[in-house]
Image (cartoon, rainbow, N blue to C red):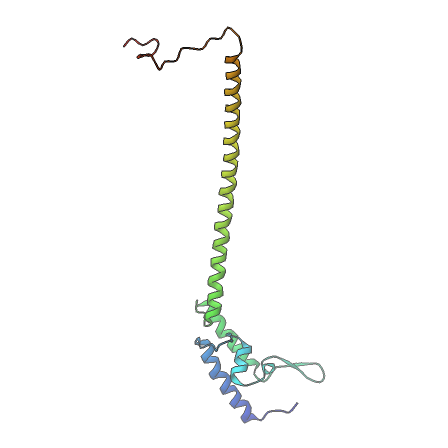
Length: 165
């Protein structure tokens, strides 16, 4: 691989810094993000220059623009800690994640309510069924021949039994 001249490296670093400022200010190109990949593409340099390399003997050495990638990540982290998210899509993703967690909580509450209402309905139906069985049993007892007599219907009387009015 051919080495680049000092002048080319300085020009590339200037281009990277200009793009870095734009990205951190929120000027994200269409289809891009606020990340090293977009930084490299917009500056016109290879992304591999932002990562460490290995010498022929296997020892690590920094990439030619690694210090700029680290600076970019530090500044981006500071902005995020300050509550500023330069990438509007990242802000939208965070907002949607918050919305999803809120909806999950509401869904869990609704499930709990539904479970309680289902239990209530089953208890109510059981009570109604028991009352109906008791009414049917009492009707059978009343219909069967025995010494139990039905009381006269009070609809024709003007006063109830035992009333002194």
